Length: 541
Image (cartoon, rainbow, N blue to C red; front, side, top):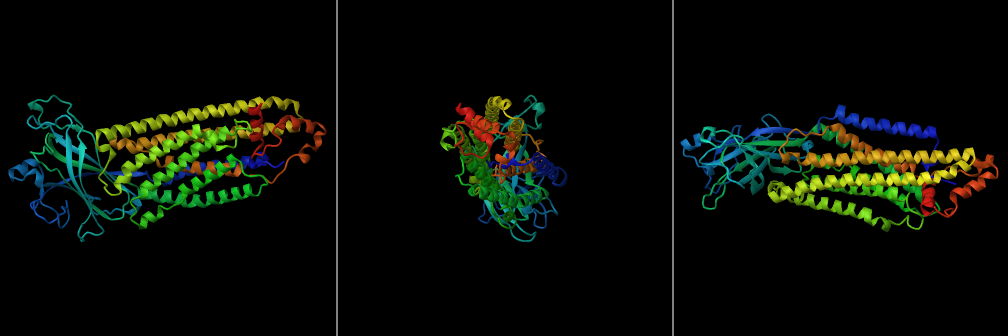
């Protein structure tokens, strides 16, 4: 009888395969830990206070903090008061990057966080629920002599959350509030060399715009971008892994189609898993180096979400197909209670992403974290996503435990067999259990990666600048996914070897009885492995 490669491959070859995959896994971690730099870099900018004398004119004007055409500057607002310069004529300017440096398409994105430096004043304190109105403009150019080209302009509102740790007395005037970081801007591609940010804080007493926000002394910006070295390592990994998974996927499905029986649900799901892995592997990011594709971040999130959905669904079906009897298995509709919440959760992830990065395609200054409702929604979403991920892993552990118990029930038939036959089935059971434990390990690492990714994406909005995930974690987990999918497709592909008459010829008439004992009621069942058939019989009994 022909089975899967995991059953028919010799132990020596399986050990060689396992060691090879383990070495590749170690290599994936080492690439990130030893070769690639940290995934992102953060650069802090202190904005320059420029004076806009022609604020009421019709001509649009960009204010440069340095260079040959730099703006007229003031150091403090006391100096502005002495020169009778109104707040509406002050522009906070920042140039990205610093002098004598250039931005690069390898940086992939620019995320800018804003922090106000506000001094306490008895006559102008920060009121409860203060909201800052920001007139923000973004421009770009590719050399130091060209005119600036407007990229985006928007009037945004940001909540001001500040604490004053000292007593609010006259003696403490001039001390600074401790204010939370404010999300400011995110650009999904870095297609130009130089960027200029101009920020105005319009004051209108009649409309109570920017009243009750305290005495703003300075504005600091924190610019975050992906490191070019990490991007190159990441693209290289994708380029190398794409043909590997694509070839094994085509080889796997070709072997499935050569069989006389139609493919079962488990084999179809394994093939779908290979497709989703190939989809996330295809290095379309190479085009972002030469084209200004601001939607690449959103597209990357969608690809990763599809892979997450497929991987989590595969684990449920992989375990479930080894638990159900033949009347229930091989039907996708049976898993709607387990797969349905996964699809729904992935859809919610997509909607959440579209609400922020989708809008940022047209307005990079938009942020779902800008309002109290949006912040609570985002925080709740991250918290609930983490809880659901942990609950999923516990449920998967329970299913694996049930599979092990199902197999243990079948082991009671083994002592009645001949030695050769018993050793054969004990070997199959051991291999399958080992694969299930590898699956649990992969699931645990995936859940940890998902939670850390969500926390890492939101930590800038929580006021903590110290969280950073090492490059080795990214490359290691990404390599683990590819190696796991490769191993599943290879081990569950139909084998060309056959067991039966040759192997059992030394057992005489005992073999016939043992085969009946193991396969009775399911001799008509087709499946990828003997364990698949054994668990189906045990569930049916």
